[in-house]
Structure formats: C-alpha cells, structure tokens
Length: 193
Image 1 (cartoon, rainbow, N blue to C red):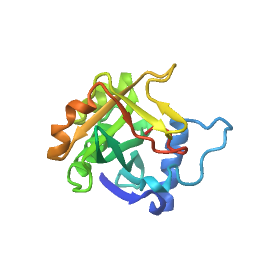
Image 2: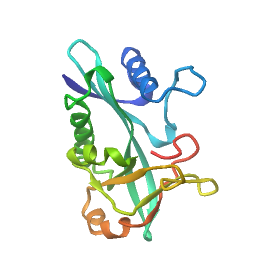
Image 3: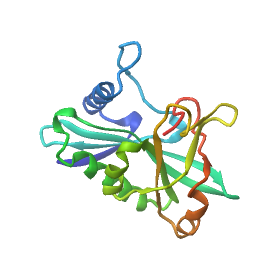
Image 4: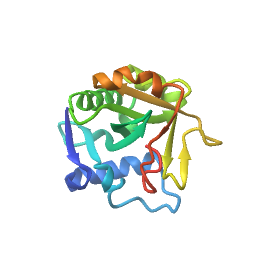
C-alpha cells in the first residue's frame, strides 16, 4: 500500500474515477447522477490524498482544503479534511485511520499551515482522535459566506469540531478557538468542510 497525493484537478483519471465512485457510494447524489468533475472550490486549493493498494485499488481517500481565516484579531493559515471515505469492502482494517493520520502529519510538516480545523459527525470523534486530532468542545465552524452563513450547529446537525495546532502561535491561541464560533466561510461550493 502507498499514500499518494495530487492536486484534486491533477489526480490521474483511473484513481479519480474510483474516488468519485467511493464518494457517490458514501453520499449518493440527490438526482442519482454521480459527480464527474472536481468536488471542491479551486480557491481552496484542494489536495487529494489516497491510500492505494498494490493492485491500484483506492482503499481510502480524503481531500485537504486550505484557506486563510480571521479569528481572535489575527489571520490564520488553516487547512481541513473533507470527503473522508473508505471503500466499504475494506472498512475495519485501519485504512481510514492510517490516511487521516498521514493527512495530519502532512499538514504538521507544511510550514504554510498554522492549524487544522474541520467538522465531523459526533459519532466519528473517537475515530479522528485515534488519528491524532483533538476535539474542540463547544466550538462551532461557521461555513458558507458572511452573507449566507452555514454554521456547524445548525438545527438537525450533530457535528463536532476537530483541530490540530501546528505552529507555536496557533498552540498558544488554542483557548480562543475552544468554545467559540470560528468564521471559516469557505464559500458556496464547500459550504462547510
């Protein structure tokens, strides 16, 4: 097995087709037609990470998204996980945790990233914690746009915020991210990552 990383738009077609099929299996489209193109806003510089078996089968996939955000009086270089999925026939073998841990390590090694932030279903919190991410209690990511916000605590959501603080200033600022509303605002395509 190997972990491969590509800009989403440059992922080889054979691999991208498998990723789209896995995403459609996990989150079927409302109209029954699977997505064909990029999943994310190019302004978020989406980077696809794939765990690929020796035979070329994509076992797990996720996308990293990047955005500057303003919070607590300063600008932060943030990244987040999106569209984390494991092939249903390969679940329960640690593939997803391995890939999510590798994504955290890649972000930690990137000098252009201060912190990682994303939402997940509350039931998945232990999975992400096992891969090295930290739960931010009572925190809310506010997605969408400033004019059309999409908060992670919207009615009907059961989301929690996960984080990792990579730089010294980010680690020092952890208390201002805990228990707060964080204005992520990734836009209209990726309303909330």
